[in-house]
Image 1: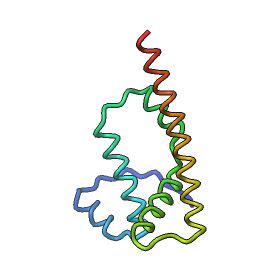
Image 2 (image 1 turned 90 degrees about the vertical axis):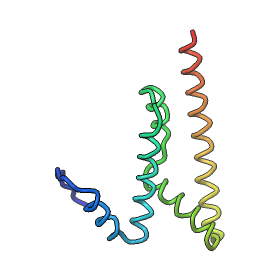
Image 3 (image 1 turned 135 degrees about the horizontal axis):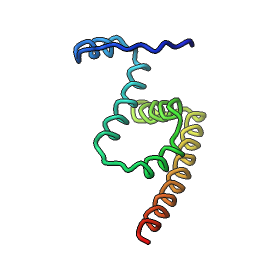
Image 4 (image 1 turned 30 degrees about the horizontal axis):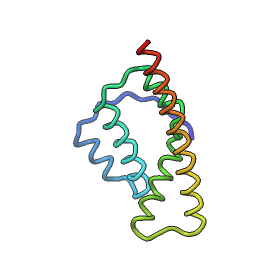
Length: 113
């Protein structure tokens, strides 16, 4: 899809109106982005720690798919294929989380020296 960089000034009401027009899938994706933005802005993050965490971050499409599967699992349950898919996402996420934690621990130890 071609993209265009455009600078625009929107009021909160304009933004809310645009969000109200999103379909269910788009709204779910927007919600994931908004949650991540709120989390990022609410914490004091040093640059090196943020770089370490960003290195193993899931791509947006995978984060959105995982969110969709988790929501579907809560609401109606998953098919056998989706269960395998979510298990793979969770295993990958766990591995990335462990590696990130190890890297952050190494950074903390280096800073103590």
